[in-house]
Image 1 (cartoon, helix red, strand yellow):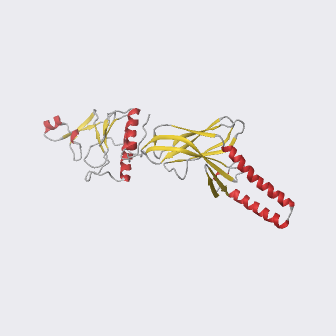
Image 2: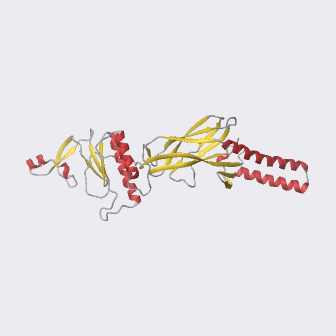
Length: 330
């Protein structure tokens, strides 16, 4: 058996549901066959004819055995929910050999490289042997490149068995469909969250635990003014919440330009959504109760895992093209 799955491809031929790729080693062997054939014709040496026949039979045997290795193999996929874009996630490929007596060797499963760009495998799933009638599993990591619905209808199953001269590939149907959450960024959470009137994402703290009352400074939220103290002193005073304990924090997401009312450009949209998702994720992990506001969505205050999933489900598709019908999560 050869491990030439990663060998450079010399020639590729496709026919129906099969793709045959000639490897560098296979190209050398074919060149050798032509050389032996020419020598046999020129010299008329019977021994060279026997060598030529043996080489040709090896090519024929390689085609037959590789076809048997791919025959009657079915594929299933298992993965977890709650996948974030650009974050490695485990995916399990499950191969079943439905043949009654013949095992399959040297199988490799990968995503279609030409027609599928929304996700990639860090490494292909390699199966050394699958005994007849048995099931084999292999877990590898994959990375989704963008948020939204991820749908994959097929995978590539290939083998270089038995000699590594050719890599034969067939397409197997699968059903992979999941919602990809926005990419998370590394951010430093501030201890206080003043509100503002700028574009994009605004944050407001609604914590109930007051640490100190201080003088009002430019940029402080009007909602944080302590009116009783202000009335007593005659000067504006504002509340400052303690950093400890659970806070109620509202996060505002605006995906439209405040001047034109049009949707912002895709790059800025993805940046805002990613920052918003990151804030929500880390705030809930810290124990704060988070509320999300946007033009068409408003959630309650909560910090449970179900609440996080609800907000991420919304952020996964907000601002994306909704003209295409989208499946719903169970």
